[in-house]
Length: 120
Image (cartoon, helix red, strand yellow):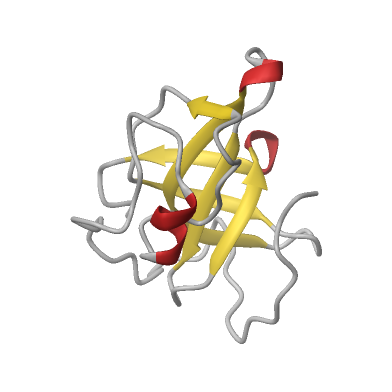
């Protein structure tokens, strides 16, 4: 698991109604290219692979659920998607932000994409 280790006060489940999803952000994400170190420094990206990556072709930003290291499901917004140029057919590496604003790096198999419509 690639995800960042951190403590959360809030736990969510897929069947829980009333998750306080925000509107998708108008900025603070990377799309159409890989992130640079300056993007991370400016809060536009969660990570940088130092030029060894290319954009992964999914819609950014979008809503998603991330399964954390304890098996809990965490609502997130996908703000970055890349794949390493040495493994073009491999799983994407994703930059995520929790609803509380914490940044996470995760692999594609840890994330369930929900799209751009506000989840109910």
